[in-house]
Image 1 (tube, one colour):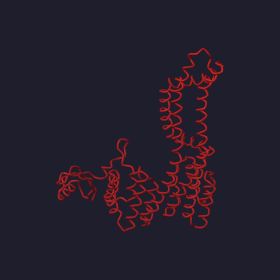
Image 2 (cartoon, helix red, strand yellow):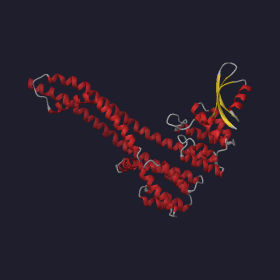
Image 3 (tube, one colour):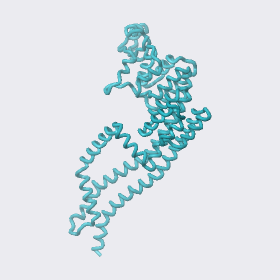
Image 4 (spheres, one colour):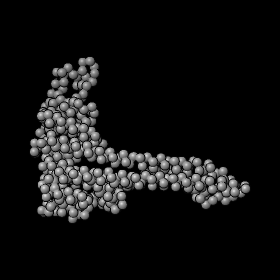
Length: 403
């Protein structure tokens, strides 16, 4: 049997939509008529999702929606409900049409005889390689409900870390945007009107005032070109970022910056430790866990380092020594991994390392923002001060001449 999505009209003239199981679309229409419904559209759930093309892509679950779905799914499985029936329950209670469409497509894959992890792998925009690897481990071990619970916890912690990052960046971005808008308005509207009063006089304007007038005239004339150049530069930068060699070179330079480099390294280390803790704790072999962990790293140099460490582990070297030889991972993570390998509690120590790395990210982010915000305000204040001095200097000179 397969799952079919339908739209039908009832006897009262209202339109309803849903999902039902049938062998063929013709049988699905017959079942709807037996229920007193007049089918308008019937199609398989898989075709409803559609192939992933640039013009038509399967629906994508956001981070919050995926976390909620995983938590609800784990709760249903813990209650003893089979996977397929749990999916049907999730479809019925979901208020979002795109989510229902995605879950119906997954359920259709299950009814067709495919394993759950392969059904999820068909939708990589919603379920990444880590998610599918954990589901596969849960199917093999028969502990799918427990693994889904750990997945929900992982998504919740990563979502909290992402939220802290966004909250820390919102204020500086807003301040910079407002300050730039104010300065641009002063330079293109206020300054020309104020300085025009002094240009009609015979006295020579101060150097600072003349420089301000030149910058203001340039901005008023060249702003379309500057805007177009900025958009073109953004487009070129995005295309260049897609090239692995260029992206690796840029990220290498970012890692060398005083505050940003350690912050990015700690953030990636926290992701890696958290991913390995879930995979190893779920019974996934270490080599497979390392390969899946490489996909969650953002920095290309760390991806290369983890790949080299994976090759060393495959040859029999302990994980902490393999990671230490790369020279890219924090010492705290290395010590925690060594302790976990010696005690046989690698998953627990990795989980502790992930929490400590997340705390370190929060600390470094707070330190960076505490330094950046006053420097940003000071810089904007200096720019405004220069504009004010350039306007006031002619007024001061006129007052001295009148005396």
